[in-house]
Image (tube, rainbow, N blue to C red; front, top):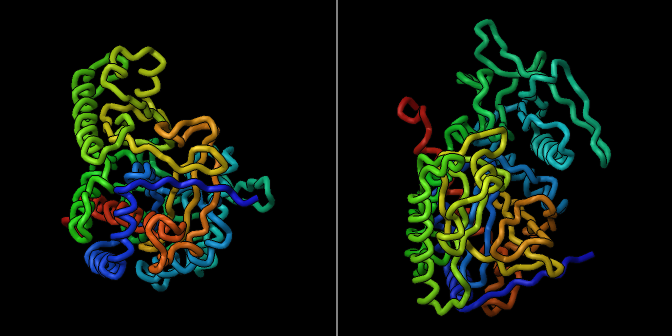
Length: 432
C-alpha cells in the first residue's frame, strides 16, 4: 500500500524552498568547504518538523536506532556512505566491534542492529556484537521475529596491559557505539586509546547536552541564512536553558516559567510578522536524554504551574533512571504533514556527511503540536534516493522531490552542528 502523503506549505516555506533550489550549487559548495574544516559524526539521525511556514530540526540523535525502518532501496547508499566513513577513519580496517543498547527484549531495536550490522558487513568489515549487559557471560544467540539471529558476546580487555577492547577472540580496529550511555560510562569503555571509538564517549548523555547542540546549530543557521538570504528563524527553533531544576521539590519553577514566557513571546512576534494565525507553544524536555521521555507541551506559562505528581515524576527521571536537573525550553514547531491522515514528521538518516534516507514517524493519536516519539508511533519509509535531486524546472511547492532535498539540507545543517558540538566538548581536544 502506497502511503498518501499530505504536506502543506505556506508563503515563508515556499520562499525557502525556492531560494534553496536557486542556490543549490552555492549550498553544496558551502557544505563541501565546511566538511574540510570539520569531521562529521560516524552516523546521525535528525527529527524535523515542517509547519508549512517553518522547517526545523527538533532533535539530533548521535546513536540512531531505526535503520530497520529505512526503505530497502536505501541500503546501497548506506553501504557506500559507510565505506567512505571507514576509509577516512581507518582505511585498513578489518574488524569492527558494534556495542548495542543493553536491552535484548526490544525486537524492533534488535532488528535495527541486524540492519546496521548488514550495512557494515557489506562495507567490507567483520562485525561482531559486544554487550555491556552484566547478564550475558558467554556468547548468546537471539532469534529475530522475521528470521535471522544476533549473537551478543561479553566485552573484555585485550593485550598484556589490557589497553584494547574487544571480545575473547576478536581484536577490532574500530568500535562503534549504538548505545547512548544513559546509564553512565562503564569502566570497560574508559581509556580506550589504541582503537577508534565512534563516536567518542563525550557524545553520550553523561556529558552531552542538547543546549550545546542547538547553540552550535543556531550559529550555523545564521551563517546559512545569510548565504541564501533568508530569515534564520525559518530553519531554527528558539530555545532557552534552565539549570538546577528539581521537579519533585518544585525547585526552579520561576526560572522555568520565565523561560517559557520568553520563548513564547519571541515566537509570537515572528508569528505576527508572518501573519501566522496558529498559537505559539513550547516543548520542555531534558537537556540530556532520549527516547522522547520527559517531554511536556505548554501554550502558556500557567500550563506548567503547580504540576501534579504524575507530571513531576515524568519530568524528574528519564531513560535508565537518569535524573533531570537541566531542561531546555524549545519553540514548538507544528507538523502539518500527514501520512494516511495521521500526523507525521520526517526523520533523516546520515552516515558520514551523506544523506542515506529516512522515514516518517507517524502517530494516529497525536496532534500537530504534540510529541510523536511516543508509544503507538509507527514508521513509513522515505526513499530519498528517488527524490533527493531537485527539479529545477518545477514551480516551488509543486513537486515532492524539492521537499526531500530541502529536508536533506536542513538535516545536514544539524549534522554539521553535531560536529561542532563534539569538537567543543571533546575532553581530549587540547591534547590531540
